[in-house]
Amino acid sequence: MPVHSEQKQYNVCPICSSAIKTWRVKRVGSDTYNLDLCGTCGYSFVNPRPSLQFLMDYYSSFGHGHVGAGNEAPDLKTVLAKEQNDPNSTVDAKRLIKTIKSLVKNHKSNRFLDVGCGYGFFSKEALNAGFDVVALELAKNERAIAKEITGLNPAATSFEEFECAPESLGVVFMSQILEHALDVNLWIKKSRDFLVNDGIIAIALPNYGSIFRMIMQENEPYICPPAHLNFFNPQSLSRLLENHGFKIEAVQWISRIPKRTFEKRLPRLVKPLLPVIDVASSASLKIVDALHLGMMINVYGRKLNA
Image (tube, rainbow, N blue to C red; front, side, top):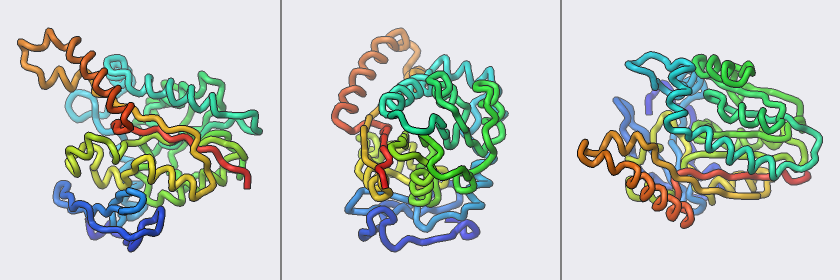
């Protein structure tokens, strides 16, 4: 852990207060990160934690990284072409928003908060579903592209700094963002304060309990400090939500490997078999998801009446 970024050391699990122990020590560049693990709820996390200012600076410049040619920040055309080739965000957005819509009751607010909206694919789907969307995004380039895709003006603010009236939101949505949070209890408590009674929180993130993480251990791509600080399985994430007055309504497991991953690794003579390989891979991943060992989890919680 960079000395200048160290802020807080946890001595017990911040979710269930049980004993923790070092799981792995991971070196990233010139920095070393200690990864602790709770033996009770299964939550793993970077410990000690970086400072909030370190994270704000990091995400404001890093965002989702560079996907254009060379190292230039991607433009709208590049982002849309990438999504057309591998429509992961579009597919995920339709599933998540459809599930959220099915869970929303006739409560007082139709406002939908998209925390860390990225390029705006989820906000766009929420708008299409009739929600009144408020979006947050720290990364400048992503805010600009999200504005083009959705017509919204995402706020350049962190969730820590965001404020709105208590019990004014119908949905708080966090896709691929809670794993970055400095204080996960603060994020969930704040979400509950903002939500109306029976309001929905929906969280999508990498599954620490996936078979891929079990095989690859700390070398799994999503174990990537300082970008990711928190590593949840369904049990630890559900425990966190329940601690703050949420009832778990649904859990989904999702695994998907982009076609380009196979294309890059297959010998030229075998590439004509790519469609067959893709079908076989999809079938295998569906089995993994059915066994609750998938790469990603989507967890939906409902705020219980106080």
